[in-house]
Length: 253
Image 1 (tube, rainbow, N blue to C red):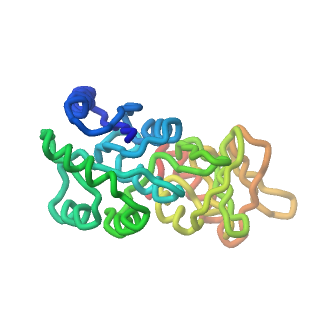
Image 2 (cartoon, helix red, strand yellow):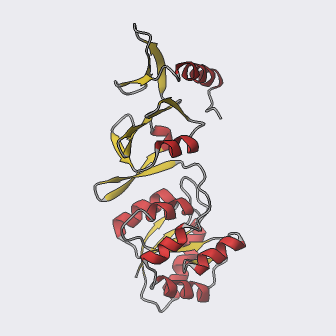
Image 3 (cartoon, rainbow, N blue to C red):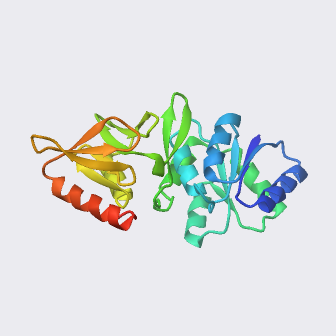
């Protein structure tokens, strides 16, 4: 069994490595990660069977890693390594997703590894309903061919609905995201403003608002040539939000 250790504390990773090396189980440590973003990348590179995953990590936490893994065809087994509230621990345990409270004991780690060996897709589906409500993400995860790619939200210029997908536009390229535009607006409403029924634009990336001869308002974004049309119904709100943002230099809520 290939194991990946993800924890932002180096000493915690060293302790887990030491405990795993003491076990008689057939385990191989294939990678380490200091946050969730690196954990996802390392998992794709190694195909680890088990993730020892700390919940509270900077950049991208363990719960967001678990959510992204649910989108893959063959997710690994997850063992959370953290202190967490009692209700959640009972829920994880009921769905055969194990957890290790720090400081971690060798006998508990051995038991968790044994449970992970019989982890299944059905048990993953059981886990999903117990994951706490998502906080605002710092990264979005998109599929690029057969790989997962993480995009920092601060780098996204706009979201635009395109049939059943949403186009995620950065200064460099476009990606497709399988999430509703409305859900993105609800989550990132302090940073993105709706300019049209099919588009949300990052206030961080708006360079200017340009009025056309016919009175139509367009958004000019930094780093891209494409201009986005503002619906007449939303024009006044967009102008106000843009002026307030420029004045305050902080995302609105």
